[in-house]
Image 1 (cartoon, rainbow, N blue to C red):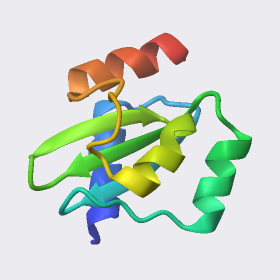
Image 2 (image 1 turned 90 degrees about the vertical axis):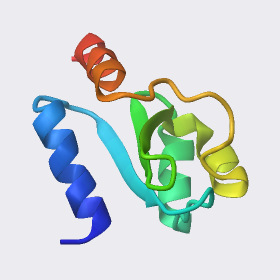
Image 3 (image 1 turned 180 degrees about the vertical axis):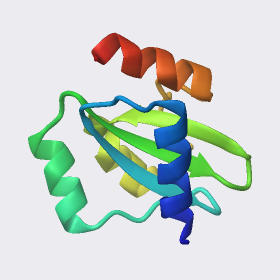
Length: 98
């Protein structure tokens, strides 16, 4: 099982009833790779889309709004301010949206 598939399992275990788009990324360093399709999708759908990054070196999770994809693509996950950095915070945000 690849790293993003493992992250998906963690997401499903911690937030079982989400009904919106969450892009999953696992980063060994600061850089995050997005395909042109992923970038275009988040630009066209800036509301209620999210990017969840598992930063392996820092052993943490960072949740960003999908509208931040350009900055994340160019600057990495050190860009801006994440909406949440723990499963508890992530779950709280997702529960408010459901």
